[in-house]
Image 1: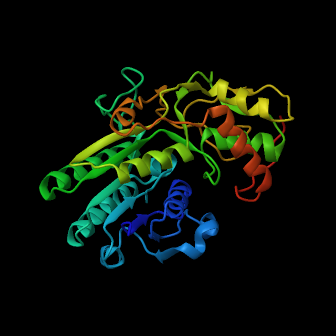
Image 2: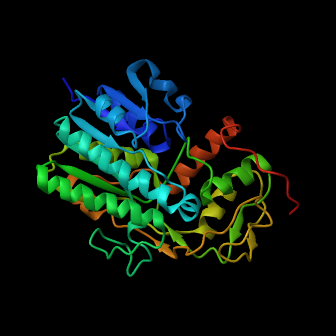
Length: 334
């Protein structure tokens, strides 16, 4: 019988896709989620095949009890929003670092045999070289990256102390169906598909990002789950391909019937956009985020299979069928 998987944050965007893939592979799965951002509807396709426990990773007694009799932990629960970490860095630290410590302690107490920890490309900060390999210097530029890097360091300490195999996956920009609203691709898609206006680009649009399909990210997660790992290791979950924000806007526009050119808005970092109600340009913006997937290929034979063009089309078709999934935006003249 396959190991029983305990998955924190399993009702979220990435977590729910991992859950679907695990159920498809025949794994028994327990989801532990506080539903602050996760949704039960994300688990609709596997609702009859999983156990769902409502709980917060900051609640150690409940977490430890819920984790009993599980042999593998996938820790996907996190505070993800950059603006939220800028506003409340202590809360970000409490969830991402303190919550991870709770997961590690509960895992040790319950005799867990392996942990997969969701980390982030944000641990690197501004790129010194690209593509960024796992040995690239880590110098986060946001509190979020600091809290995720600290969580990684605790994973390494616990792995060495308790001889517990732990894998930290440094996610690039993961995109796909059920993605939360707030990042650049979602804003482009909401503009084009729902609001019927062109994509809005902050600044020049030359910033480079590494976009990876959630299906490919889940495949790497499962490779780490199945293959032997003897200590703590970090892997980039990315494609190694840098796509500019301008090129992303062109891909979105190319899939739509709205043949309008993108709007370039000269908005400074930290200022509010005139075209996207309530949206600020992120301060200390990363100029390049392009990660090398070479280590994952060498160790697991994993390669990303979904092209950005195809993946964007899938997400665009999905939001066209589910326009109420993302919150509405006010009307703006363009």
